[in-house]
Length: 123
View 1 (cartoon, rainbow, N blue to C red):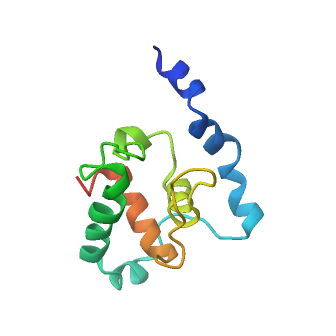
View 2: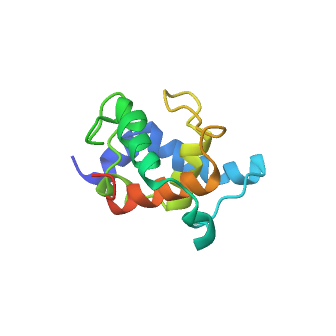
View 3: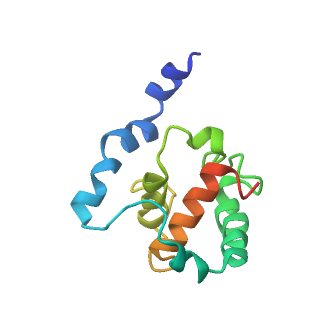
C-alpha cells in the first residue's frame, strides 16, 4: 500500500492535519520553536530523557517503535513540525489514549522532548 493511501486511511493523521493545527488558536496556548537558550539551561535533560523512555515508552514502546501508541521515531514524525508535537505532548489527543502532560511538563520541557523525538535523541 502506498504511503499516501496509508496516511489517508489513518484517522489520527486526519485529525492532526485537520484539527490539531488550529488547537493553539482555540486554546490560546502559545506554541513555538524551542525556547531560548537560557530556559534550556535550567531543564533537567536527564530527567526528561528518563521521562521519555519510561512514561512515553510505556505506551509507545521502550524503543519508541510503537505499542498501544504508535511509533514516535524521527521517520514516523517527519511530517510533523516540532511545535505540533509539542502541543500533542502538552494537550494530548482527545478521543485517544494519549493523555495531556500539561501540568507535569512545561512548554520548554515539551519543546525539548519534541525536538529530541524529531532528531532521534532518545534512541
